[in-house]
Image 1 (cartoon, rainbow, N blue to C red):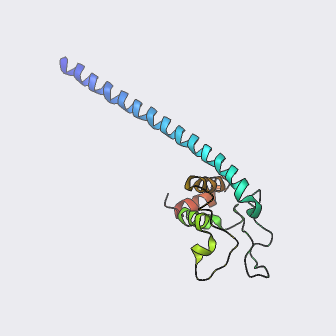
Image 2: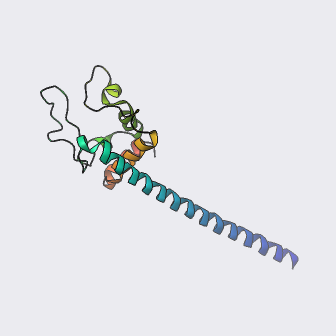
Image 3: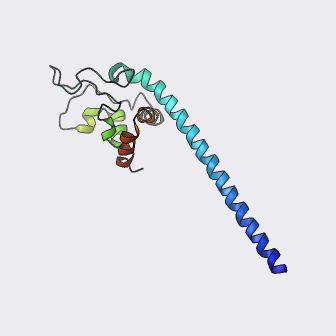
Length: 150
């Protein structure tokens, strides 16, 4: 009889532990979602202030962005699904934001995209990327997530 009570107690503790773990996991996921929403909101604010003048208020890029201008440089590309931003991993995109395209590409490449390392914090740069990624359809977002290892 005593063994049954002990087994019942162990089962109760195990079930309660799973329930607590599940509730904690759910709260953590909810906080992560809220954190992501805050980062996206910050990213939109920073994007509007620092990026939209070249890349467009709706992430549409500059007209004829695939064709070089007379100075040999390419216009600013779109960051929506019609562009190629989603073809690059987070690390490369963050490096471009921090250092500028010419520094990342190297080999004498010229670009109007400056580096923002002295203007934006790492958190602001990451938030801009979170905002941009939040606008992509599932296919592009999934592809880019795989490139970024997550």
